[in-house]
Length: 543
Image (cartoon, rainbow, N blue to C red):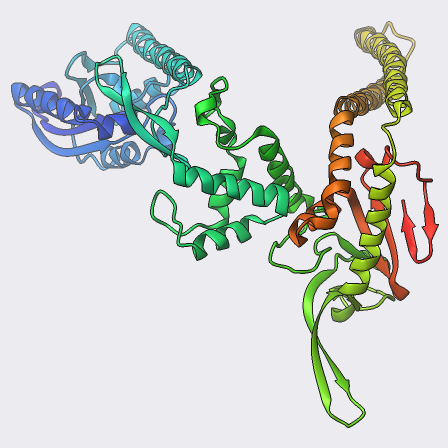
């Protein structure tokens, strides 16, 4: 039997159709019907019979590897079983656009005895090295075109966002998409964002309650649900919804799409920059990875003043605040029950770690002691002018860091030169011209590498320290004004606001037996106080 003739009679065809993006799938001029029509007409002209059809919707042939494309893998399994004779595509780039992968995918089918055809480019053959080279060039061009298309799209997106225009997609809560007369390059009307008056007020309230009253994301979600306020999708608010809102810088007056950000757009600003930054600082402090360093009360519904920032002085456990029922037996024998807020060392109660402190502390007593410390500090700052020596000290600290950096850099360069000298000896050692043995040279190189690593690490730390000093110097005026503002407002502030002030003023508060309280003042504010490193007053220690 003539094998060539037998091969020509094979007519079972499998077709693959593909569009790269979700937009191509959704829009009216969906590319799949066009590809399908072209393949059917081509098969009919050849007298072939289409027995299988596979479609990939929204799959990039450039970004997605062949191994991750389900439809392509299914076609390969069918090819191994010899369920079809011809693989037909509209163009070969429907198989993929990866120059380092797709040519080999195409060749794989041919090696299985499957003929691979394109309605535009004809049959792909591998009869010679020239065929291999042309096949590779074809997909190299396809890959290059994908990269160019990607660059064009990203550039256009960047331009649109920088011009302050809405790119489409989910509309953030607080805004609405409306037609304002703008047209796209095809002459079709497109929408832009504007602030929704009702939702905008809700967004402002959310940021204020987090930044100024210490509300948690969970507490905000609960508040919104109690008011029957829903997301744009009609769902109840969850903690993750609120966190996404709090992290969205666009509320401060910017159009943001992926890595692209517009200039400031006043008509889109819902939240002041300072309120946004304060809210974000609280959100970051509450992240799980910062749990042991967190100094902001976790729950806005806890009615104790120090919840989230109070620690056991004996075992280091963070104390929880709760309402505890005390029972008293009166003289007439009756039992009286009183609900009172208390702080609880759960490590002591559950015996999860050794603790020789108390398990319970009356919140009323602890709060009074801590507030007394805070009020003394506020009284001090109210009558204290800003000390110019603080700024002078900061400048001196910055200069010291610069001197240290120069010293460390000199040591680093010396260590690098030493390492280069040792490495230069390697060739001589191999040639037998070095006086040093391989083992000795290896030890010397290792020590030099360690020195380089140590100096690089020290330089990085010194640079960070210098930057921190610079940041503090730049913010000193803001810190002082904020500190003075706290002193003025504390007495009349609500519980939630006082909790936030104390959590920012004190890095840590510890309580021990006999209600011995120790507070650690945040360094940003401590610099304004002429306190000694460790001041003891009665049962209070201020550090």
